[in-house]
Image (tube, one colour):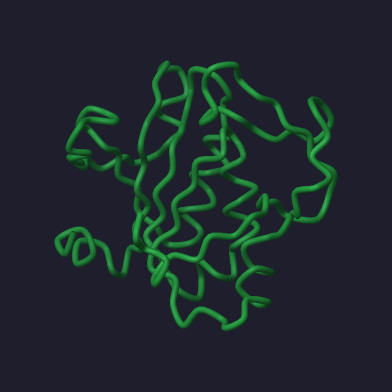
Length: 170
């Protein structure tokens, strides 16, 4: 996408700690591929790294991290927890998907993570995957309010201190 000057691709899976991973592939939908702890095809050739370890060990170390995009098929909390220090340090905007139809991420735990980190949640009210990818954001008090809905949501978490300043700039 001609972004190599600002985006650093890393061939690795993100998790809290080094551990065996197993790939679970969804036929016809490579975007739904996920990693589980004990089932599926072995993925020993994929390095596992936490976001905090990646940040500490990167050469050169990034001067800032402005945005984190996560699409990890139900492992959002593990990825976020693996980067708690990075998030606390840089206060990036965090964009992630929540799928309450298939894999149900721990919505209450995600609420607690963002509340304790001082973040506000917003949800995309516009159509998902539209040709323009236009976002229309609405405030979402808690993800756990969506626990009975059967939806896929695009969620944006924004630092309370930066709050509306960040959203207005984008």
